[in-house]
Length: 109
Length: 113
Image 1 (cartoon, rainbow over the protein chains, first blue to last red):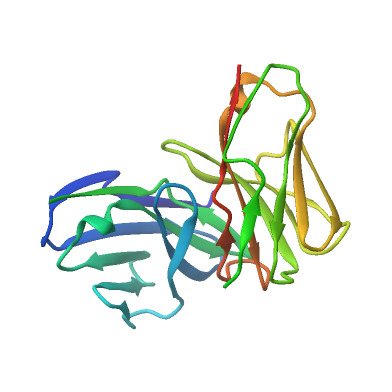
Image 2 (image 1 turned 135 degrees about the vertical axis):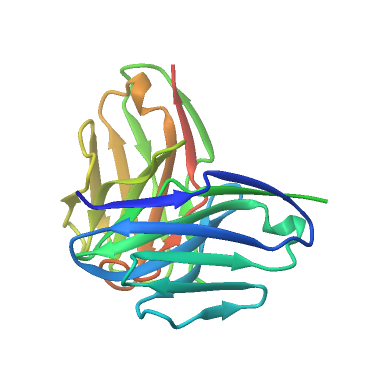
């Protein structure tokens, strides 16, 4: 059975800290891995990763995929209170998205 | 920017009622999806549609049906609401099938009493 596991489930850090969120997967036919940020209600797209070892970067956020070890990490440097959200990881397997349960990140001022 | 609009942010219904959740997207996307989101379980796919009048069951279709009469509108129907359908419902659309970038609506928090 395809599965995606995110860790930790929740995380509380102080503003300015760096955080690393993890997403591991076991799927039958990997096509891509996606990261979303969910504040309040609607998830918004962050990154799509298809190739191992190539870092995607957007401002203070970056992500990388390891297709050999079957995981991805999402890094956020110099965190701000606006980074508080649930971060969702999803894997496209056979054109179907398998979602992790999410990591709830709380940034304390 | 793509806009996906869900008709209600919060909804309270009684057990046994018929419930309609509406979703409209404005970017001419072929593909539309309905998910439910429960704490600790992630997003679970209820139904999806790759074309008008076309629908496919997702992972948890039991107790739900859908309607797609027009390309921009995808409705989720709970024929007879039950308390275990209390959840956050998210609609999404995308340009292409599968794992390409999804655009989500703001969600409907449904409570069935």
